Picture 1 (cartoon, helix red, strand yellow):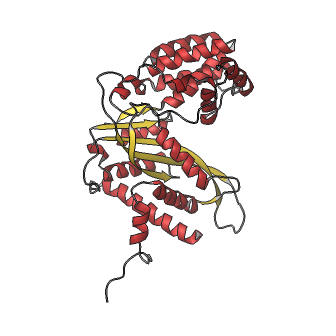
Picture 2 (tube, rainbow, N blue to C red):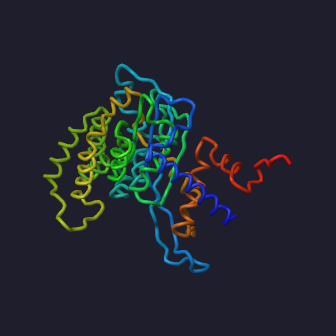
Picture 3 (tube, rainbow, N blue to C red):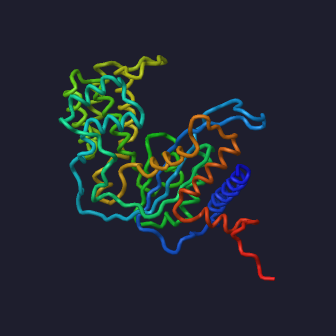
Length: 361
């Protein structure tokens, strides 16, 4: 089974790379009957354990490697004359829920203090809901396909573009590219999806403004009030106001000393990180306009894919041979999680497949 998985993964990787090369040569034609109306490309990454190959049984030279993931989804949504939800969803104003989100997505400076803050700010009896509510205006996913690779962003960009071309995403009337603030994500967007609306994931914005509000306040209520004001401003497209307040806060607490590694909960570091994130992504934070156009404001689709990949490829005692074994299992997982039946089609058509009909004698 391990050998077969390696073979199939290598075949899928070769097909993926061939698609990227055909697009580069302008030889790749759409593989769908009709162009979609609304599409989103979302990019993120995870990590998995790898080991050096060719050293026999056991784990030799273990190393965590980053795997890049892309979700390409067709969407069902409508456009609106005005912002369909100008007020922040209640799910983003529930202290325990926000605390859990921040911890899951990157950690909240001062964990013990965060527990006290959530307890003090939360109404009596509040329980953390199970997940982000689907707002009525939010676009609904129709079909998603996904890509994964251990290769760097320079190689990954053409792969994503090839998949988008095959699904005729460039002909869609409304197109979005959604990601977090990693610089390489926006290099891919500018290089291969320049006509897609660039949108920075709102959940990451929540994490940065919440962490900054936490280290600046003296009392739990004061911290939460600042967070509510900042997240409301970002939600309503007024991120510039938050940037100005963060600049004033940075002047008050001081800037991180050049070359010095500060503690994770040092106010100078936390405020500087939030200021950098919002400042660098200000042009990708027009959330009222995105909602009006029926485009996603979070990268929840690819975030879910990261979890689905991790459930198979990441875990205690899991180490994949690098690069071949790790790349192969990522391809099989990506094909399985794609909703267009590509893995079944590959098994049905590959040479020697037991599912392939033999020609009549």
